[in-house]
View 1 (tube, rainbow, N blue to C red):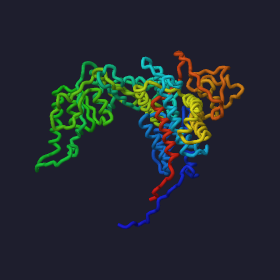
View 2 (view 1 turned 90 degrees about the vertical axis):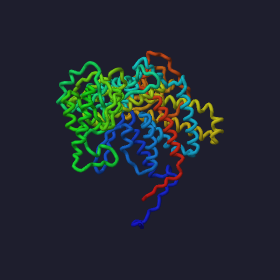
View 3 (view 1 turned 45 degrees about the vertical axis):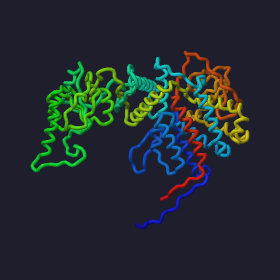
View 4 (view 1 turned 30 degrees about the horizontal axis):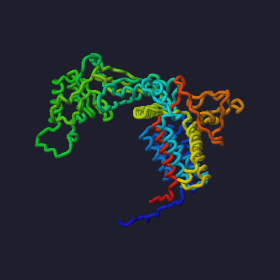
Length: 568
């Protein structure tokens, strides 16, 4: 069929970073994400013009998918950051702010983009090799014999999300629960390949955050009050459980694909019901105590099972199927047209009724040690509760990453300022050979180094949102914040500790404002004093990858010569 509307030609934009409209949008995107960064970051409310759900957040995993843009350049960066967040769960805003800052610094310096790309690659290599060294000045080893550093790591993630609206006490409580739940998912005596367990989150709105708790085992909804009084009698011995993934509603459409032949005069409904009741008789005969179905159970079958003192749980949902299978050892039964094999049955320990607000929940204890637990999360309203649930899931993922690499980086902007000082000093010691390899002048190389270091420092400075000033000490190169109402003459009396809490101010220390010129120096290592520990930690694995993603995405953006858009 011929076209009714003439096809529009594609729009080609040459040198997109020199385009005023694209540059303005990139800068706006940078300011938007920068203002979300850190514990005092500003919240963003995102909603569609035609209505729909309103999102209130400062978390990159929630904010970026909610933001839509017609600009391919913005979408390129957004997609890259979201890919990092989907794999590592943390440091999304760090990667985005650093990436956009690198692009801005390259533009402002006037460097040829190919030179900026080469310098960025070179300095990224210096950063990663330094961070992976044992004597790295901003790396902390995590000791699994103590939960203190794990709690600090969890608390740093949770406290960085202001939309959770948590007090200090509440943030610490949720952090401890997150670590407790994580440790419960790590099997203690598991020979061979270790398989981590599951954390199931249950949200309870309208209650104090301090009512949140972690329980070993699984808690499932029990909407039917009819049989709850009999649960109390089932708190000893092992109980047999059967788990169905097939629907037991008795509908023909649930019988599977294929041709169904029905003889004249045959009542299909009664035949299916008879089949369901035969299934019920076998379950009663096999002394099953708990009957669980992922989907719907026919009311007649439910009544029959309950009349034989069997606890019936329907509409479990696919999300809880895997943890329940892992907890009980049961094999889900996918058909009602054959007898249930003995190996399909599982075991549960105690069954206890618990109540959280208006929710009646059945607490299913494992028959032995299990790596499945349930986290009950409470908060005052839906928006805060949703943010807490998201951040707890991210925290769980970050804690799991520590099993592969039991290290963390000091937080509060100190890693960024420390790296910037290290790179300035290290790169200047290797100018001659580097300039030759990159085929650029020494002046161009120095410009590239300065832009890279300023970008790192701008990430640290982005943590301040209340008009204060960001400083770097000229001894250890840690990050400090000077409140807006404090005069420079009284600086030493008001700085206290650095951003990560490892370094205390003293009269012999010297500071300078971030993004100002200062003499190159090699950051002095901190004394290995076990009594002084950082109070803010970042995930080593997540931040290292975020650093790589930020630099590589910035280089990709700097390398784009044309943007071609199909306008049809």
